[in-house]
Image (cartoon, rainbow, N blue to C red; front, top):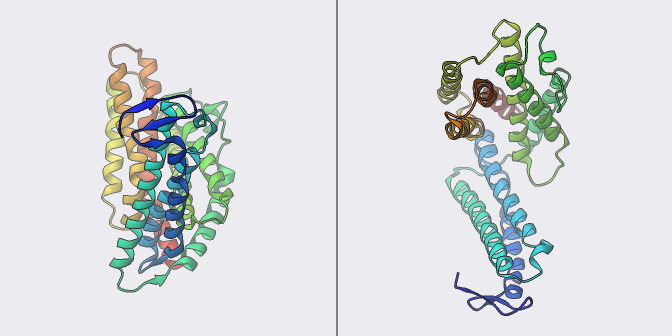
Length: 311
């Protein structure tokens, strides 16, 4: 982008580009999105692979629409230099998202020996997975957990493990609600992946609760304890990566949970040497969350993949 010159609130330029000219580009981006939607369909030679690929296409289409909507915010109508820069950035992100959606779909379709329609598979799988989620709702806590220790049938304080249990339980309820409330718009594959995500959290919650009720407080009393929790999270990631069934879904979903380890590493590193053990114990909650969810990815992926293929 060229240098920005301000001539007044109504006349801001970026090189030869004015704010009004930049705004006029929105219809072309919208048209590009509609072009992708017009030729896109749930083709595939394997319903599980179709879920993963079409989920990515849907995500990029939604991203493009989101950046376009962001570009229409009233805060940019003043016509300042920042308005032009912000709008240009949002529209560039929208263009990139729709270009990626187009590329992914075209390359996927070209790789197919047969372009069978997978919509019915995905619709049936979505319905079955949602029914499974409904069956687990009774065992999940509310989204806001006031007393984490009450989640386990055992006399235990609010240890790192118990706090992690409350965090996972809250997320499990939230994600289950999202999976059940999703409408019937152009995000069928994303709905299936969202249901799988909700089931990962539900399984992680159940498994961690059994662990704590079985006598493991998952408590942090020293730096060494934090290291052990981190090691457990890394082992959980490796366990998921070693899957020999449902591996397509594992590869698609695992990064959603595994990145928590790196984020927690970075956060604790920034706080190194300046916080109490109690504070570190609180920060280590995310290692427990990562370990629990990553370990749940493998069995849930196998189950969901089977459901998709049998649908």
